[in-house]
Length: 160
Length: 363
Length: 106
Image 1: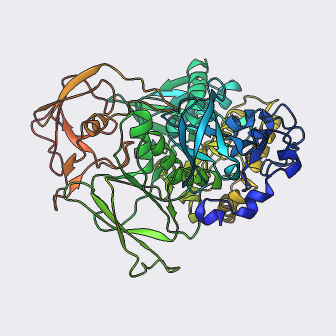
Image 2: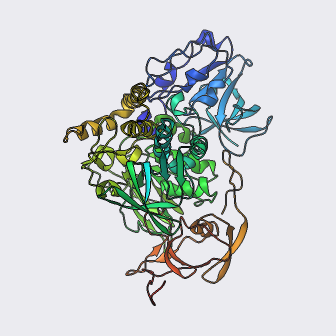
Image 3: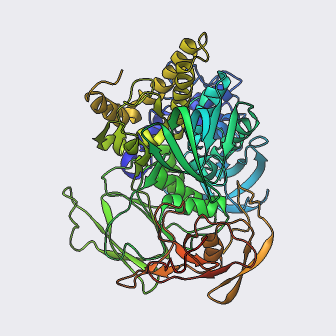
């Protein structure tokens, strides 16, 4: 249970996954936010209309995945670092996963690192495709990882 | 003796916002801070804040401190005294203080007490060994002075502070082998817990520290599972070699001045201990003495900032400042506070404030 | 041990200076708390308690708890966790309660 372990259940993860059809179209946001807390900067950051307006600041984010273009600006805005971008169209057997990274060392583009799941277990070797800043004054890096497709919805961190 | 219109004691998020709100309305503010820098606990917070735009959502705590500190330093209506420790309150309304070794007094027209809180301790054999630190202390060492607290740090407490500081330890390059929590669930925002779990830090709920070991400083701890009566479960004892044990088991308001001033107090566990009775506008039972932030009840920096505004606006209004704008600004601030508190994570605060209001009503 | 590289923070330090700790020369940065400089130099035990001689060190780090009291430049009970380090300071461990008093001081 999330409140006991800090790790979302499979059901919770399924509930925030965009449809198969949408995932097949290109990069899209995955918002792993499951607890009602007073917080809404994801909505304020998105310029595409991907997040619907909040009725109450404690509501969980509601999405319009069709409007989402996978730009990733919400990743750096989320104080809980709970937002990721997944692109299942990268290749036949690989997907891209963009994660926030607030640690040193920052991995080099082109390097290979360990892909970790939500429990911090290494599940695959992944390649670092791109490293960019989430915005000036942000101190958060957005790291694009090339991961085996079967782990696109599992890998959420790395070990450099 | 010095006169001042509004005296604000403490320059954490509540005190800073109280000073700015009152000064904006035209009141003269004297802001006292016992440390040599402004910002209180804000300066140590490297994580992004929650809330909404008004509460600086998505901005890092220490950056919010930089902003507010600068605003306060530059405001013509705010006089700041650092290294200034308030010593006492006399019944004529005189506050005594020590500033860099010199004794001084102030007789303000209103006081806003924003002294925050201090960390709780945990009792177990050898809990006094060097190397056993409060979580705030670890934050101070790491984030303010750039000193590593240790190589391997076990954390006690999976509330927001425990989990956030664990994450900050990882950022500083320190190993965190475990987070130990006595309750059967995690008290922190789940996203904070998820962040450390995916970095490989295990969270052991229903566990506690039985004892610490070391000759001159900490070398090892013994932890165990506990049952629902909080008794250790035999056979689950485990030793863990760590050089630092970080204790994050809650905060208690720093209320000495309130007691001295004769403010009516009540013991409310949900708010962290003894807290003052106060009106909706944060005035205590002593006219023109206000509270804001953790000293009135343990909550969060976002709420502390909004409470600071409420107290500052009202203190200024009572002295005749901001007559036209008061009602509107006050209503907006109260709405913000209500939004912060009305979700499920605000339940404890709501219960605490409900208990408090059942005492003699303060008009 | 000091943090060399941090993902978010930059540490503004004052001038590097030296002071003595129980007669030994130690380096630190001007303005940082004495206890932080000692901690960085590997010193975690700052005193021993009066009755049972239990080791004492850092606890609260904000000047509340008195666990870090040491004698600095002859003055006892200095809260080293908040007292800023100055060049040439003479820092000594004090055992239990610091000795105050003596001749009438002006």
